[in-house]
Image 1 (spheres, rainbow, N blue to C red):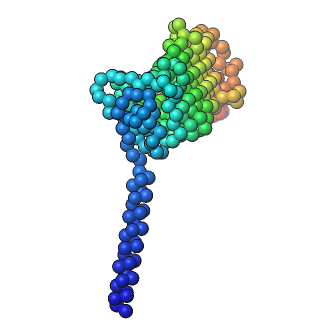
Image 2: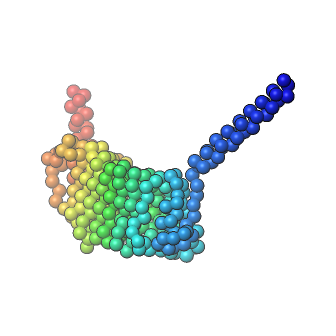
Length: 289
């Protein structure tokens, strides 16, 4: 009887150990992996495209390309991403990803993607509630387009600059930590930022020139930041529902064609902070009485 009990105990211990080992293996496999891109090729083993394809959700991609500035030139189409990924480049001054203006650089589908330390020479598309975060990166092109109308876009310490135009379509836009979003103010054609939700500018600036427009949702703020709109520019907040753009210790500047602010529902166009302060004081006195 004792021997049988011992055998059962040993068998149970072995079974438990096997089960525990399987659980540990599953946990380990679920952890994010760090994958390395080690060449500048458009495709093939070790390329950025191949590394994106073999990555699983939440993986991190890094680069081992040496210390000299280099460029990945895409020739077979945009880099398609349909999983949550973080791509950490060596620095925007060291690595450029270019499509030669033939197609978007990135096509992001239903994924949360963070791009860091990259110079992106081309456009970015996002679909199906994708969320895009750019950190310490630049996006430049003759006509920059970031299309992500059903997701959010966040710029952190990044520069978005188009030689001719800049167009950003997104559900929500956050601009902070040294970011400058600039549409042309001299020879370019237009700049336009269309945001279905909120625009938040924190200590930074959005500059739109030559007939530019910033079209936002119902709750837009720029604490410590600035939004500058050039010739015939417009900033529109809300869909005729009286939405607002609020700037705290920052500047809202619109040059040329300045209408009376009170005549435009949900829009502030070139009205000074002093004017807003007077209106606030008047409203307070009226409420107090």
